[in-house]
Length: 198
Image (cartoon, rainbow, N blue to C red):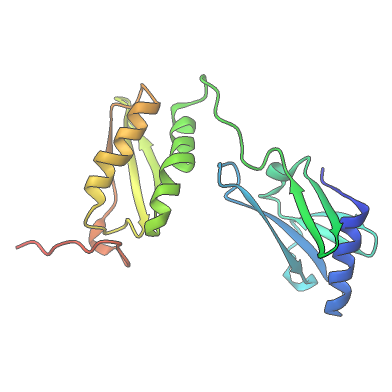
């Protein structure tokens, strides 16, 4: 599933030895898996922090643990440590990490989710916001929910019409429109406050 070079194992072993914690391992997690923002995160993992659902890869002197929800995105990953005069560089190559563009015959919801994660949410992230797919009507109207800084934002309607709807309709011919299913009255930290009506 995942291969670690000898130099990577030596690097991890050295880091673990410096911690002086019995049973300490390394956990590898996929972050934003299946999207163009996909990345890997490494952290120490004490025995008390493991719940038994992780995949364990036994190495010389320690174990690498991969969360069950990350495993499919890290299948075939290669971890290497390249030594240099300044110490070295750890590299992780995980071909499945960022997912693949859904095929033309994939469901509309799969294709909508991909456009949301690959194009729309990275733009909304600059405002601390994001959207998620709620449903798609038989008429092709995509129903969305706003979260984070977009939840309760005074500009949510403009974002929906001028950004989200324009992008989805341009990428997916089956999309006829978008609708917001968010209750914006209870947003905690909107990027732009809504104007009081009255």
